[in-house]
Length: 129
Image 1: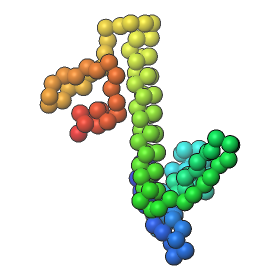
Image 2: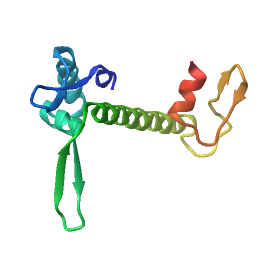
Image 3: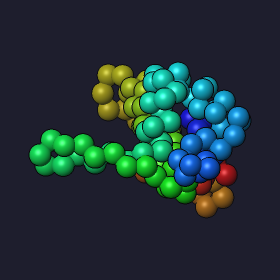
């Protein structure tokens, strides 16, 4: 996911948007196999929007550089959120493998000790910072 943060976009002379420079292309080359896709698929997913109509038709249109960056950020947030949810699930299974337990994990921050029924990755980052 961190490799995605190194991907910057710019329009070429022909107006087509793609990786801004060699460093951005290299970041895509590292991120793609980690995500289980090829570089071309990841690049197209970040630089194009596909809309499915009610008739089964798919319309693909290119994005502007700013929209590509927003798409990259949304993908990174989704990956972090799913990773965090999976980590919480695994921790909960380890804490209470046989059912309800009195064991819990909380976060101590400058505002006190917090225990939430459902927490998010963003809350962890706020408390961690």
